Image (tube, rainbow, N blue to C red; front, side, top):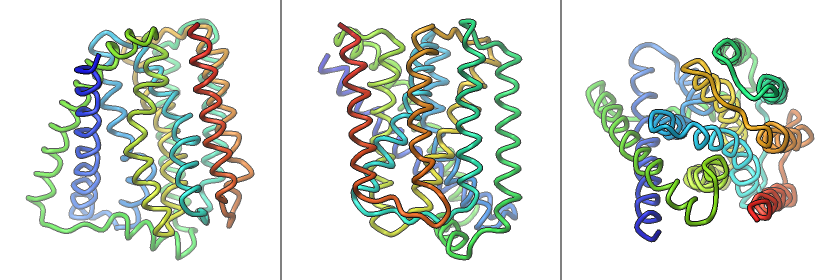
Length: 316
């Protein structure tokens, strides 16, 4: 098991490095191709930072571990809210001014309910996956259109996030390096996680929910804490909500389109509703011009720990 843990940690490190290289390379390349720094920052904050998790899930599906991928997608949503946002707010209160986050949060709640409904019969079909992917396209279009009405402070924060140095060649190299790091990092994580889960008495679904989801969230949590200390509350909140939407609409939707996804009854009736409740916790926290306090961050972390405790208790 110690070898598996070592390989798992190495995989997480490669994913973190690959994600960072991907964001820098994609941002620079997008701006070289004519995208404004603001648009590049918006897309990167909301969605591109979730690509390491997508790499893990893609490797899991092709390795014959769809339950691991499904657990990781939904477990990541719970970890995004409870761990990433909770730890960031505990480090420094988060001032949130991004107006588009409120309607995006509503879409997240509706998308979670949609996945529950789609999976109630025990299967997510290709058609239902197509609907989820179409929903993501709509979300992306809405975010880009709504972006024109954002406050200057939000625009400045997103432009600063997208800032990167180097010429076209360097950005292409960054993307190539990122692809390699994500490929091999995801392979290590997917190869080691089931061995860790088996040693702990976990099925693949629970391994994805706890071991993989929380493991892949740790680098994001560290980045969110650093952003919170720099006063970038909009970046943290935008990443959390955007990442959750990406996991539901693109990751799960894409898995379903590829070949359908089995949806265990316990998953549909417990873990997905838990993800919905965690998203629901954001409603009073992310109203326009609000602040997520340290106390609220502590409560989110406590809720996450309670969920982990329940999952572990259910193993027995």
